[in-house]
Length: 198
Image 1: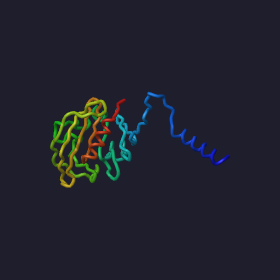
Image 2: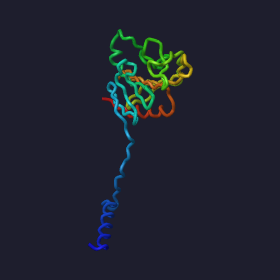
Image 3: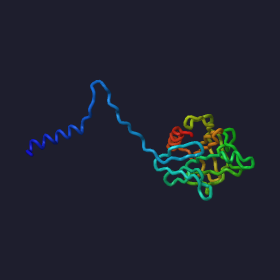
Image 4: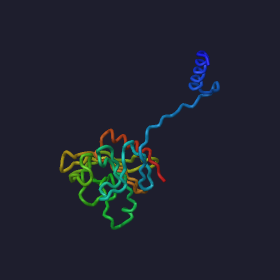
């Protein structure tokens, strides 16, 4: 094979690889780029896609991390909880979530604690106050959840933080975000916006 013939073959191959067949006047589809998706979490009837690198602990041996979403060194940034069983038992020690009470994000009947990135469940200080900053309704997928944001004060003032809550009373799904800050707020909003229901 001559040098000239080799060059022509190479040019033909490159041209074929670079071109696509098109019909005049018709737009060609533009490939879409989708954001990388993390693992899935299923909570009751709700399914969410977690941020890349995040983990979900459905059940932990001591129960302290049940429903926790975590990233990096943070043990529990948010909790996604199915409260159907707890709310169906009339003897269960539970306070229903509500933006109408000071510690409305806390479902326990004991003293609320200040869960933050630096103080995961089981190591958190006692919460001494919870002031409602914002309330109303916010989306979780196609559903509207009761929403609240509280400023929480703690026995250990270094753990003072804001807590956000979403409550679906019919589905009995509670979402609580601890140690709220703008970057994680945006991730939580995106996570919940993409939720689907069975």
